[in-house]
Image (cartoon, rainbow, N blue to C red; front, side, top):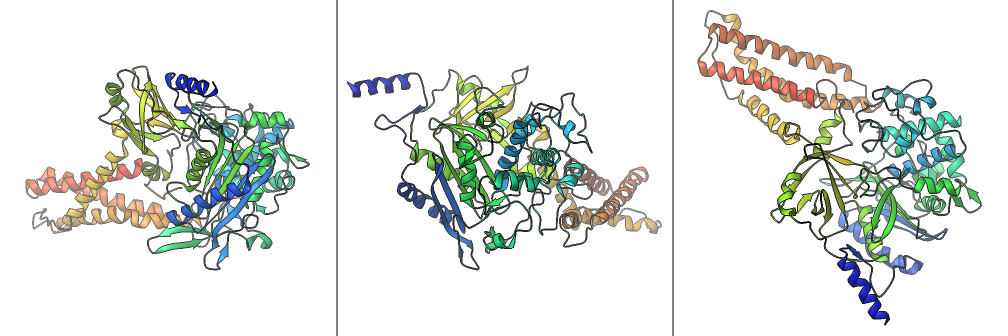
Length: 619
């Protein structure tokens, strides 16, 4: 009778088109035995270190208010042969730091010192966020990454502990442009987290770092954590060295983080385990209480989603539905480190892992997925396409860019390569996006063919898809580009300009009559103009980098002179091109070629301006 009931339940789930079917023989149990967890981690993490060429990693698993398992793998420092020790080795945890900033905000809100729905300008005092839109930015917007700021790469990491700006100067001088009305588009914002940390500083009356140490590190017994630069000597000796992959092998480097609220925390995995325990135990760790139970519930409930059919974000965490479980997670990534924290509130389980080298695919996400598949397994059934899906697929094809974008600084060109994605329609009626294949199951709703992912499109009044949102990372949405916004078009334009510039070294021109000896040198103007255009990035790139470190003099004041020289050469070439046509100097072919070079230089000038590269490159 029992087997018959199970078979009927399985038949019902399949008939209703569900994509997840729990195994009929065993309910998900989750991690429980430390020895079994050790066996699982020992089978996954060492393989990751070898496959991705990562020197070291550490992981911690918590359950029911205690650390169930913690272990270090590989090396924290290859040169010194220093192994990773779970409760001693400090890893830079990157953006997982934001969870501590958001927790500090919730503490102050709990005490009535902050209102999450009040204009943040009420807490700033010495400067104000411009009223670009009628709707003000609130703490709710900062905590859900919906303030509408453009994104910038600058001032995340530095070369020495003395580089960068203090928090109070950073939020004023690096205020990004507002590009979306608050609460409408989710666009991950480091500046938003810095602003939140600055407000914590102002409202609490103590420096941000001191607040975190006093109100989070101390009650959570996080004795091997630091949010200051440079590290205290007692902790510095246990710091993991970061590594990046050079063509000739691994290169060891140190990173420095001038803006603590969004990326500045370094800790052992066991210390982060204490934080996860508090999040899973209604704000309690041992005898200490960092948040009241109702505040924890508010922090962990959904506060924004781009579409009700999708998961969204809480106050700090990213929601995820996988294998029938509600997962709250947050990743951390610097130029040298990666980490990932996840908790399953309904299961009272959490996991945190850190690596001292970045990898692709991200090792933390690979471990997260393996953890869920191992401890909460499900059987997948293929999604059932809607009627007419084959004919509809091509309408979604196109180029999309992430909402996390730069509009005013040189980062825009970097994002053109990193944050634009192409949706392609396959002959079988499926679509492809970022390596995943989806099929339409309902109007504008797509399910992953071989997985559990969802992809939702929004349309404008004419029925044209304009926005795509997916559950892989609710921190970003994809905005469809017009044909003239496609970055590949601009790369072709750049290739055309450089091809023309290069040709000038192989073409000899005779343009002016012999008696106009003073114009005879004008035939070399295209060559010199092309030379200036081609060396412009070679000069401007290192020149702009001098602004990032105090170890070298800031030479960006020279940038306007370089631009002026290029503009002067272009002006002279343009003037002579007009004179050539007016006086009919040279042959028709020579006049056309000369004009083509000037035309390419004008396109190149506009290209530089479009990508915010005309002048010192600001990051």
